[in-house]
Image 1 (cartoon, protein in one colour):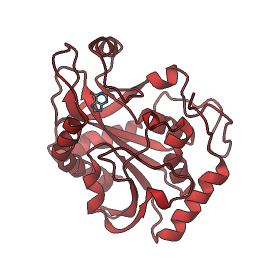
Image 2 (cartoon, rainbow, N blue to C red):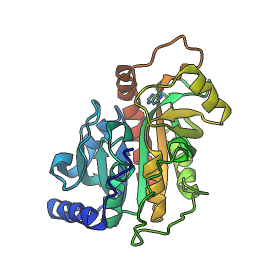
Image 3 (cartoon, rainbow, N blue to C red):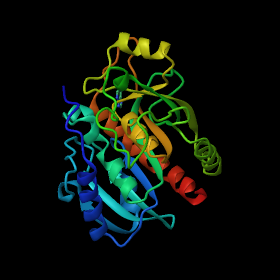
Image 4 (cartoon, helix red, strand yellow):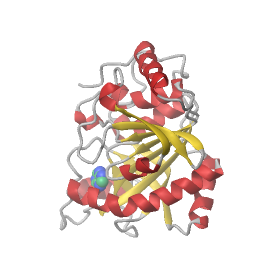
Length: 280
Ligand code: HPA
């Protein structure tokens, strides 16, 4: 199966070194923008822009709605690296490739990672356009044997058996709650279930996820969070609810719908993220 190649420290460092030559900034915060949520990157101040295709060893993002660019600039005065688009497992890349950008961020000295995604609502209270603070995740792909840390352990980054008890940093969760209050943004809190995709879920999948305690479901994020935690990065995560997951089988989910909801959510998310950055 496609759990290989395992990316090496040398490949990670080649990418990090290349990025250093292409920017004057020393980023402290990393942000990964999910499907349809890329607009935030446009408002970065004094940004250096690097297409993914130019970065050594970085897989290409092949999905519509993912611009495939890295931007390094200032957000609320904080030097920030933004991934405008991400790499997904369903594109056929290995878990190690999917999480390569997080490894590169680590070598660049980034200590805080903010992950965002588009997700389907499993919690019946959620409606499209809502935002959810990710308090925990269900690593379903990992449970099936696709954990991004499978393979040789890169000792430079962290231990063989890293802890995941507080994957989403408690003080950052608190900061996000404050940011939501300050900006009068409605922010649900819930559990994100990470599947591989690319097919959306069947109704029985969704009822299973609901029973398992998931509030939102998507096709990303969890591997990135695991790799971030492996090296002790502090992680904060948000899901933009793009559609009601189809527990009854009566509605159809499309990628177009996901991207349209992104247009509505992106400004709200930007307001919230800016307030978070001010508080960091
Ligand atoms: N399921 C899985 N991934 C998603 C969904 C969904 O309903 N919406 C956006 N990403």
